[in-house]
Length: 251
Image (cartoon, rainbow, N blue to C red; front, side):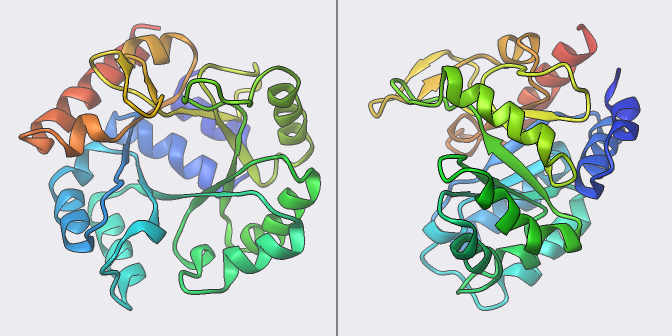
């Protein structure tokens, strides 16, 4: 099934929108915009927003975040047609994550289409986040696998994430993983640690090439430093978009 066909396999509004957006824009590229300056972030988004399907943010690392940051991000999202994924990695009991998601400085539920969570606390974390996110039509990714060397998200842990996704498939839209984990076409796999040059950094982040990731069954390639540290981020983003999309077409 192609992306457009898979949009019919899910009832979640965010998952439907993402599948359709990917097909319409011909992109499976997510920008991991791990910048600490808000003006630099918005400038980057304006340059490459047309080439991505998802913008992944770490809103809590930005040192000069304005009060109207959500409004500005929403303007850019509507201008360039992408979804926003706040990489919060929730990892607490249901009652706590409800407040972390809806309240506090960032009020993530108001502006982030997609969030993610560890499953260490058990199903209560999904239920707590769903109480906030489901009424807003949001989507949740479960952290089933990670891209750092020596991480513990393997084996039974990964399989449990797949089981929980099936139990809460109205809100869970897929996984952060290194390869496809299930044949159920409604679930989206997003893979971090993607770079044209494979290898690792000095903090054990491991990188895989876009073609390899797509061949392993991933739907969305997440690229950060390979784009925003490039001399010409716009040209580099287009290169990743073309490579990622062609790998999908060639499946």
